[in-house]
Length: 316
Image 1: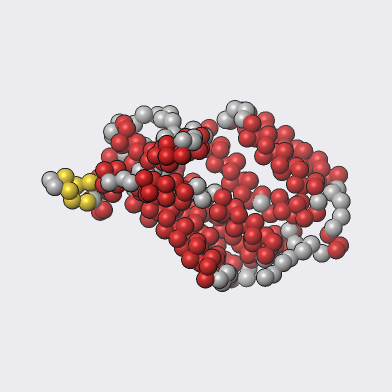
Image 2: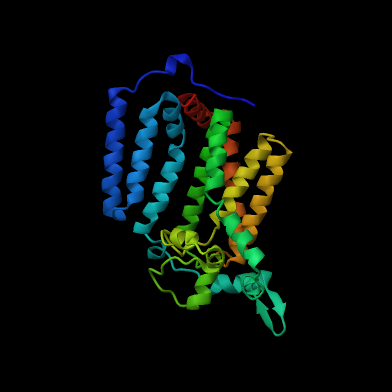
């Protein structure tokens, strides 16, 4: 196991310039957030945690600096609420539904069902619990894996973090180019477009009901935009983790574990009516493109590679 530690020469206090810069970023973030999406306690928690880790110790300072890519992703995702994608392009509802049925339709008597509709009629408590458990790994697994890489190999941590950010940026671009309604929207509202539709737990409500909790109802109440089903970034995230587990040869157990989680999330996305199979495939394509787009300039040892090397040195 490789463990990277900060060089002795870098274990020093925080400069006044860094203190002022972090203070300016913290205040600027809170003010901009208030203007764009309104005040939320989550914003104070994020600022408080970032400042605490930055000033706590040299190790935690490197840690939160390295995790700034994930913080940037979260802020950008949150700010999408201020600029709904349906302002810029029409939402695809019926055409996406028909495409799913045409490609992956399941014949049942005289009807053709989408896979979502099929599972809606053939649900089972075991599948409800399993799907909910897999969906809960959406953010915790990438973050935990990133934390592991930070202490195991800082270079691979930077590679993983930047790939994760790139995949999200690609996904966000598609969200705005191709706004798409999820399957549950059609089940509840048909093919009519209703701006400002709130998030919905869809099939994940059965997980909450099974355990008499409100985990998913709380999560989806904070969603940025329900018309962002294509691509499924839920399906992209575990694939990035799986790729880096394979790339770093982390052992058979981790490879099997992350492989199961990846396949489980893909199934759960369709089973719970949060995504079409087409959305899942788009998420897989998005992750694959992000990985290739990151690795290609990195392998050329040019300016991009040198910039990444500087980022690695910054957190060593």
